[in-house]
Image 1 (cartoon, rainbow, N blue to C red):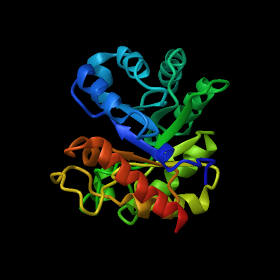
Image 2: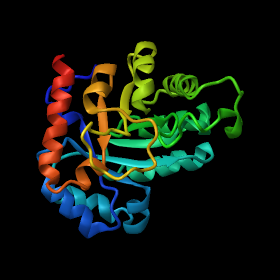
Image 3: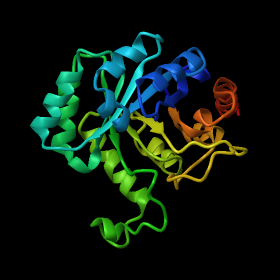
Amino acid sequence: MTGLNDPKDRLIFALDVPGLDEAVSYVQKLDGSVGMFKVGLELFLREGPAILNAVQDHTDAPIFLDLKLHDIAITVERAVKSLLKHRVKFLTVHCSGGETMLKAAAHAAEGSDLQILGVTVLTSLGPDDHTADLGFREDITLKELAVTRSRLAQKAHCAGVVCSGLEVAVIRENFKDLLTVVPGIRMVESNSAPDDQKRVMTPREAIQAGADYLVVGRPIRDADDPRTAALKIVQDIFDGVIS
């Protein structure tokens, strides 16, 4: 469990939008209602580092830069160092890059406020996706793979991991010092269209399972009133904390 006292601080809104103007609009709508804003690969590649400055111009909330870096160790190390001039709280690297790469990322962030998160298994993968097709043993499950990769992240001194709500309990049990960031969050009454997330969980369930932070995009973005939708999720987080 982290030292997070305000349930709002556990909610990360995913700025999965096409461009800067739309991203800024959501930041303005949600400032004060969420704890952090996530900038993903599409938005960062479209707008470049300017999107980080634009977000920070409209909120004091920190930024989670979700790039899932996966390359040779020296390239990842230099990429992380290039981000240190920006006020980013979390940066993702993919655990499938191996321990040396993860260590290089963590080492590059040492002495800064940037925290490295290892991505374990994408939440777009589900029971129909066989691990053997991904190059693993036929008998290894997605949960076992997430645990193995969390162990790798811990050995590499990453601050935490990104995992689905279905794995967070076992990861929390085995790696108490790792932060757990959980995407694929959906409200029970969510009217969002079906999407590519397969391993999902409600905010309350994820918090009760041991999640530190929740990443939410569509249920807030697609709502008629995004701010009200965010506040409902914060309430669900609070219910999970106190129950």
